[in-house]
Length: 349
Image (cartoon, rainbow, N blue to C red; front, side):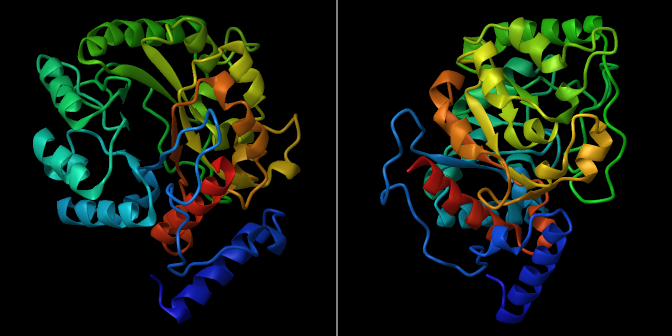
């Protein structure tokens, strides 16, 4: 918990930051950085058709997870807030991934904290040891894994993944990811489908993380975007689309329309909110959209989350994962995680 003086400083800084995006003070009147009581799942049942458990994408609190010890202590604090699920974000071959523990030990840690880990962005590394890694994933309780990583970050020759911190702050947005051709996306689809045949032996689905790069129109068919091609050409029993609600909104997507096009294909959600949406216009470039937007805790921005959640059954939603990319940049990422949790509980209860 922040000390009172730091608490107020963070609040003022945050108010000033989002005011620059047209959010206004009215958007954040309810924000508190104290250890206020958390509305737990036992206090309010989830609405029919919505998951009873709320998860946290650990990318939200990455600034606190610098080594194995802080990884474990941060998990404990996340559990104290009320979260029941977590999703790792570090590359699997890093020293920090899974707190540096073997699968059985990490599963024991999760069990001790009352946490589960249905999905992971710390995906398996391709190569001879792939199935052994997937066995470990099975032990840890993972049901969805991101696209299998090459043995080195760029070994496959594919475009690198969008940096997770890219464009998260005003004025610093890099150019948008390069546009892909239809053939390039089809190769990605083939790779996903091939790996899905391997992961299904372990009761694991492939997940497609929908960051900003999947919303860049194809260079040779600009009426289509990569996520549409992937969703249209993958089996929802083997592959699920993990929609990033914040990036989809910033990129001007009709989110409910996405669910209608591929019903049941969106089992995983990254739930996030943003200010600046009301300043966006159809002719704005992707770079300008990123500069004009700023992520804030759920409920304090301009995303129509009530309508999106009303269509959860159509989407096939099974797991809610809160993620605020820039949580650490305005003071205290755990405080942000707490505000997010409380506000999402209000949405689903």
